[in-house]
Image 1 (cartoon, rainbow, N blue to C red):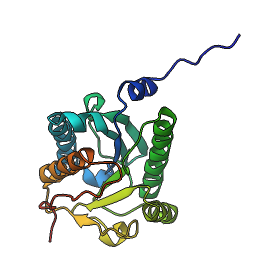
Image 2 (tube, rainbow, N blue to C red):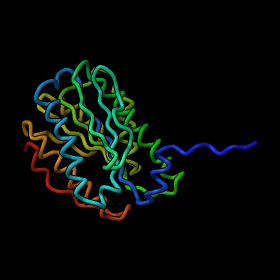
Image 3 (tube, rainbow, N blue to C red):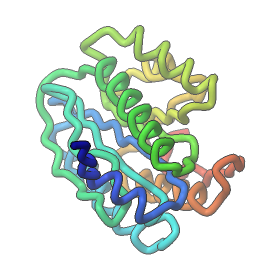
Length: 221
């Protein structure tokens, strides 16, 4: 006798909320060099991001976050979830910087989520990868660079690279035609507010609409 598969929580959520989705992977460097003020500011920023987006009901239904940290290993700390279900992790800094593996993992996660959207009949905006690092890679990034550039050229993702003091900006520039931006000191609060405002702008638009983003006042000129 045939039996129906039990739907997953993700399938139930997509059925209950058919709004178009804006998926954003927060790809965060948790290597040992981020220990101290940087990792503390990132953890605080994740909670700030949730709080700000919760104040926008439309963005709350449409924006989805996943969190990947890369340090001792590449870890998916949060699978894609809308703002109400987003549980900001407390990241711990340790280990090297497996940047190439982390970027590839983020792209895999996005492709899997897009498949879930299509299967559920849910439309979606171009997904974002929001990448923050304070150093250079300790693994090979050749494949990751190629995959990001191809995905952007085909309008499959938007890749934003942010360098914290000490970051190898020349390396970050290899991932995307969009130049990386450098954080001015430890202005993580401004950075996460910018991300929140940007995603709110996207969420209030049509999936195929070009959206103007706020000025990046937190970036070093």
